[in-house]
Image (cartoon, rainbow, N blue to C red; front, side, top):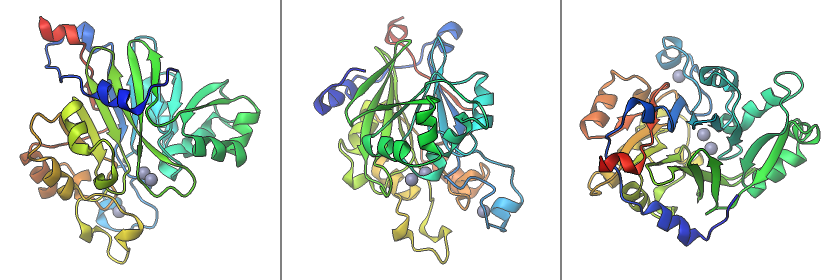
Length: 307
Ligand SMILES: [Zn+2]
Ligand SMILES: [Zn+2]
Ligand SMILES: [Zn+2]
């Protein structure tokens, strides 16, 4: 792992965005696969008996696969770990964790004795998450048995995956009960980049700003937990703060030259989980996208742009 100052991260981010001129061979080399789009509770959501969960197909919890030439890396180990790994066709070469909320790390349990019994699976996470895993069962058993190998990152770190890919770590403000929370910028070296921010309390406290990041990244998968404030009657949204999708669109609407923005991490109540809903249509009409499980986002190399 190479470690850079945070300013270096800004520099890495400030690469010009690239245009698509790819060949099929190039398409297969570096891509990010969407493995799920639901908020931590998934769909069906426990104790929801409304139409959103009763009448809808299962939707896995938000997660990504970063695929390179020699394998792939999982971003967040969700409760749907087994089916998400199955979709990729082999075990990952490593796992990146954003934070210690249930949708983002419980899947590590499937690496233990009762299931895959992996050997030294690299698990990259922040310092508090590492402490949490080492200090609490059943996660501590994964560490003690050598089934996972915890690798600690700091905000601003650039982690090389080989395969011409790297992951840049960015701290984000979130409800940090058991761990700090991070976003990841996946970058093809001398190629396109993708920012993944599944959970954040507010864009206002992010450095660099989301407007700057939108301008410097080619693809962005952003917290779309709630479309509007009236989705959770009876729950105090201040206890579970997220920027509303409508607010995020207002913020990014006028940012010139922004990358392609898709929303992800949808609460079961969010109408954006229904692609045919009026809300989904309104998002698309404003020039934003909705992540769907199975989406493959290609990270293009720079030289293709020059052809
Ligand atoms: Zn979450
Ligand atoms: Zn529901
Ligand atoms: Zn969270």
